[in-house]
Image (cartoon, rainbow, N blue to C red; front, top):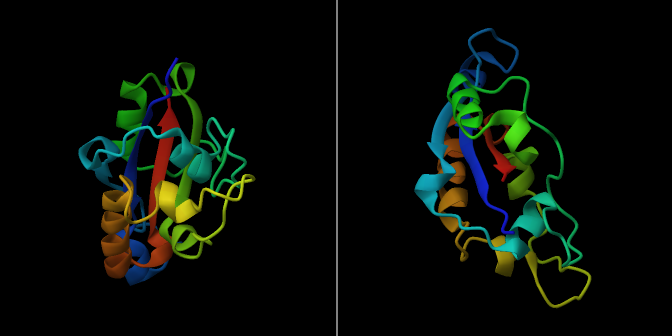
Length: 150
């Protein structure tokens, strides 16, 4: 049985203007992953999120769950996919974490570098470009990717 990834990029524009604790600094849905055609290559899912990790990668964001401060758009999309009863492996990661990751690191085999399975030149490149652009506008800690698997 295959594993599919769904999710959304969110940003928090008010946080850069008023600070992350201001009542107007809420998360907003930015773009659905479906529109960015990420696919479900298992080596990338293993590297990023620890899903089907037979490659021995040290995942960047494994098992963090659904964010309690998620945007209304994200909550709606998640519920449309069945919510916590029909999905598994929900997690999230900020642009700050992605930007500071060691993309030259390899899995336990020593042959698959992280940038080659999920870097800018892979099918994840469009996701990283959108997140990078939003982070330039709103700050690196105010852009995140939330994903779940089914």
